[in-house]
Image (cartoon, rainbow, N blue to C red; front, top):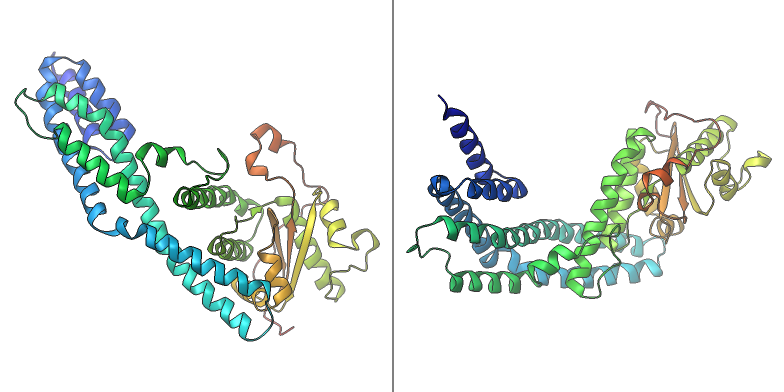
Length: 366
């Protein structure tokens, strides 16, 4: 009975070594190693399983999907260049149709690359983890054990890093926009952009607190399009949401459709944004007759001026729907997501908060 707690602890550590959490696996392996010779066989068997499993992951990546990474990135650059050139001369008709085609192709390429970037990160983690686990395995394994020898490991690392297009250390150091500016190297720059887009996406998950469901859908479509074009997505800003929603409601209540409000204190979009607490108003899109966020997106997509606003140099957006009338407010201020929590806590929405309206309207062709 006295040994039962120890056996339970050893089994728990063994399961952690074999488990999906790489940090927990490394820490559990260290702990088992510190328990002395009595646990070395258990540690060796567990680490042999993990190291063999990880090697199989690397081998599959090297001979399979990851080898397509560079080609996909090259196609993405080429497709983005063509899409952006078309947007610079965008007009109704054939160039809008072409923009749709570009968007579809870019989404296909991005979907492929997202899987490949995830795989590359996984391989980088595997190589990084092996630097910790291999010494522990060699210490615990029998002296004549020939598995995972230096020559085989060196070859595995060399081939894996060549396929990745960078070393494991370089892959780990790429970071995102919250940590470092974009790297100059092409592949690293693509990875930085991908991770920065995910960082913005994560930040925008809190936008459901201030935006309705269809407003959120519109935000996601705008940001997906920007990412496809190689333009950083917009962060949702509660102040811009309020200025946009207030304008949509006023247009509905007063029966007009214009960027210019008949209310003197709300005359321009810049003034409306400032009234909500946002300095740095950039531009505005409005649309009428859309019941869904997707419908509003495509209405703006098919209008050259509104289209260009959605892919502009803005950093923030607020989307406000009232019945079937929509407003997008774009801001060019500093990104709140890069500020500290204390700094963000000082940012306040000015004026009365207008909550999202339930999606009960009917489409009007306007």
